[in-house]
Image (cartoon, rainbow, N blue to C red; front, top):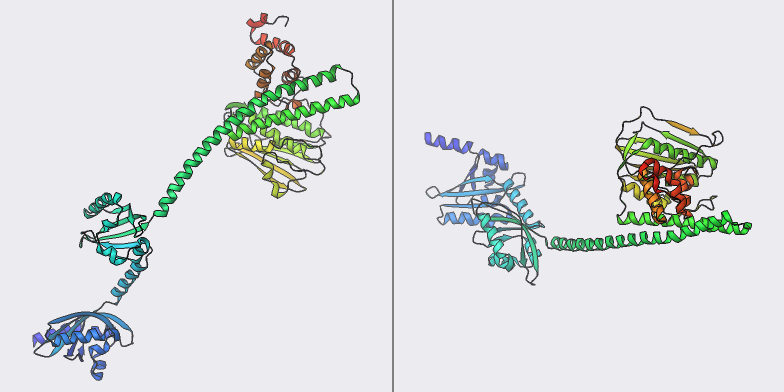
Length: 593
């Protein structure tokens, strides 16, 4: 009795689904786990004389019936899987082990609910089948055991073809040794990551495959994922070819730019020489010959046109240097306060002459000294301030300066006509000039803003503009500042009304000539090399663009006018006292000239 009670207890407590059936499959008894899993109670099944085959899914009944027949014919046990109907008419996947007791003519069944396992297996099967990546399983003998449809779609071989031959036979002959080595690495326990080789297609084409693979240590089988990277390889090669072509084109363009710059530089000097002669002789005629009003007007037109050509030549040389990368910035310490005050004084006068108010404001405390190219910074500010005054018929022009973090910012604001929104970028293109109403006669090469923005970017900054038609414009020029001297304690503000401030003395826009430069000019004058003198003056910013802003009594202004008139002897005489003061030992050098 003890053994029987133990069996009954086991029947009652087992987590597996247990049942007892007759030889024909009619269920006699089920345990509580059966009821918990499928909902059927012993009473439900006894009353209906339900058989195992009846509860099977219609598609699985034949398999269950065959299993029962095998037991009848003497099989000791049968294992099978199938869908089983629950009391709520849903189907669950059940795995069965059926055994027979011949002496009792009874079938004992033990089952487990494997519905979740089957769901996972089905999801994995869908993943394998639907994946756009190429998935495969291979064995240690070098054969594919299974490949997914993406393999067939990519390579063109059928599944039967791929499974019937060693996979290395599909590999391009040049890549087979590398493939065998990589397979050996896999077999030694290492992973394959991004290994690439070429596979042949039935049409004889090559497809580049990139592999990621690992080996199952229990079965020794290889599980791998591959991707067709043929197009990526082609794009990579196209990119390399394009890069090589671009580098070659860039080298040719750079060489052409250097040649163009050299040509323009040479031509600019060749053009300046006769132009300066024309201008000099025109001035001489005006000063020394009695002329009719019409003759004087004609000479003034010649003089004005010549100056315009000289300015255009200078602008062309500047923009050519910038575009070819030949423009070199000079890193020198300069006095920011002196530079700004001289600019403010000069443009205050020009604004006043046009009936405009001029405002200069330091919005923050400013450093006294900076490291940078003062000449180029001045060139940009002169362009922006000159444009603001040139294109403002009434109202005011303001120059505001401030240090924002490590960047120095200049704002030039005017109350002019303004610029249309669709033209705010166009004005920075070379040779672009906007027509301004009521400002007829305003001339220029159309290169000033283009050069200024390129210089600003060369300095590591930029020029931007905001404008509103009828309200005016604000140009912002900023660049990183390398500070040398300490800041002043407080910023300054200067407001000048054109009708209340007396005329101010002219202030030189550029740095004063150094003693060394004066000696160089003097030596050039000794041999009559006017071109060299003009070049030296250009280096200090004394040229046809800025000479009108110079104090006419300054040494720089006098030298410029003498150069234009080819007066070498007068240049030597003008510099003699300065040369002698700077170097007393040279005093006897200057003779009668």
